[in-house]
Length: 97
Image (tube, rainbow, N blue to C red):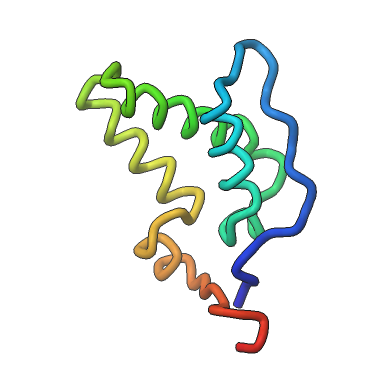
């Protein structure tokens, strides 16, 4: 069972583009969320792609086919309830659990 929040240091967003404030906030939220407890630094680029795809979707600038890629990334990063069940990851409701 993993804790409901990750208190490890949040990695720096990858260089190569300018990240919006919303993207920076989403990055912070993802890396402090419970799934980040099982991530390693090798997923930094994948998480950055996820954040980019979310931005494109919210801006209406994404092709429907790309949404399947987004879903696969979210599944691989254990960001969906189904993926957490499949990976046998249980998130503690609180530190008292």
